[in-house]
Length: 461
Image 1 (cartoon, rainbow, N blue to C red):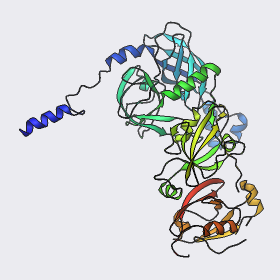
Image 2 (image 1 turned 90 degrees about the horizontal axis):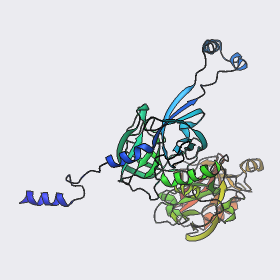
Image 3 (image 1 turned 90 degrees about the vertical axis):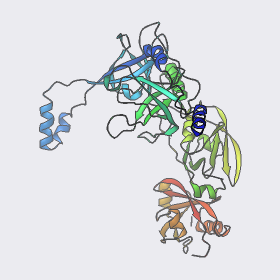
């Protein structure tokens, strides 16, 4: 009896072993003709000039002089890509064709075409190529987003093994993988699909055979797949490809703020029910954020109708908005939610985002929250771009300040909703706080803005 019940339950469950696994063969048959192998040649690393050789130690100089007798050869690299139009536009990764002197596109039927690089975008790691042909097989870039747990399929040329097929599921979405420049404009799709060197630039498919992502990165300790692969989502691909095709470069939405995550203590100090949002640590002068009256200490909870759960979500959303667009931002300010109208600015392809804001003169004081404070001299204020603030000279061990993470050399510019331009301002702000209350304190540390949460002690320190 019990066995019969168990069998019946298994038959009804979605994870039943009787459930049919997806058949990828139709997708592969239909899509493979539009997937390509990218063959790239680039200049070998340049030899040092005679003047540079003279500056090297003797043993290194002999090494380079010996190598210099051999003819310099081209470096060769391979990657993957896919065709998006019958007249020959091909999508791949920026890093696949970076520094290329020639690019060849090879089709499944072994035909080869010399490719022109229409444009590349280092921030999204995407590139658009063009080959001269007509009537080519093409792939469709999906309009809809994928879901975590959904089956996905990759076709590419890992380690030069042409047109290999691997499959897996979507492990997570919206992964933040900042570039070496600290930029973070791509909400990567994480999968466990086996992706290896040579898969870069190849398509990631859903079960409808549409491209939901472009394989771009892997996390590995061995050089091969360990089940942590990352793809550029279709919404980013659509945006970047359209701009590269139109103008050869990409312009992104820009807000002009420095932001940080909200932890549990900061959430409590700002009156949030849980940690969420992007906390504005600094607002750039003459930036779209300043023009919209966004302020340091605001927490952006929604932007253009999209929820902002962590600080990394904000550049993902803002970057896809066309410059000049007027959108709404929901911010947490002084314990209340407010809606502001923001006209998004533009960040051109060659520009680097920067925030150079000015923050809010000051007598000595006894320790407050365990901090010895002093007036910061004018030279320091000028160097930090501040018009006022209080310098932390020393922090007592196990004090409220120490437990909050404040260290000597920090400059306090805000406590709660009060701007701090002097120690008197700081004392006045402290006098309005309640024992046990958690309050946000804004600091400048090594030139960078930072919010921390400090708890008001129950007894005088």
